[in-house]
Length: 90
Image 1 (cartoon, helix red, strand yellow):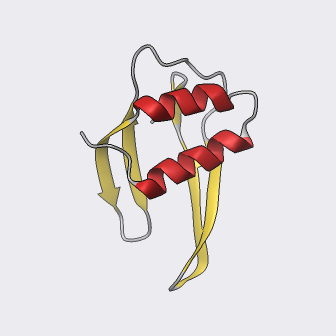
Image 2 (cartoon, one colour):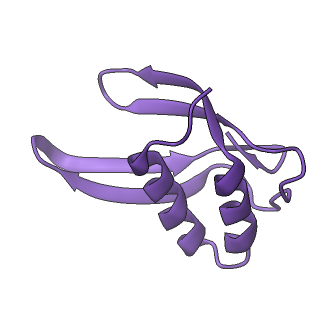
Image 3 (cartoon, rainbow, N blue to C red):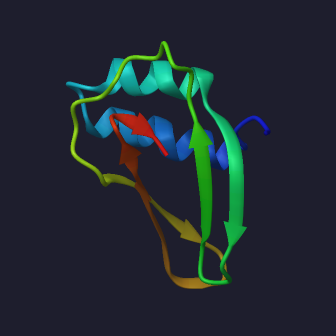
């Protein structure tokens, strides 16, 4: 397990801002999130997360629209989505 990288945290923070009704719960999950798996597919990356059992459960439906960013060398930029399982960041 490892802590979130800055890009992972930023994507989650932007996502929280996009869902005002759940933003506090998302941020509380972010504070406890640990990366338990990571895959670079060559076309993007996937971070699998675990959050604390006592973090609030979210009522949003998965997936959540995340951030979008311009990246040097990537013609159309990068889009991010955030998956939930049972109301928890995945």
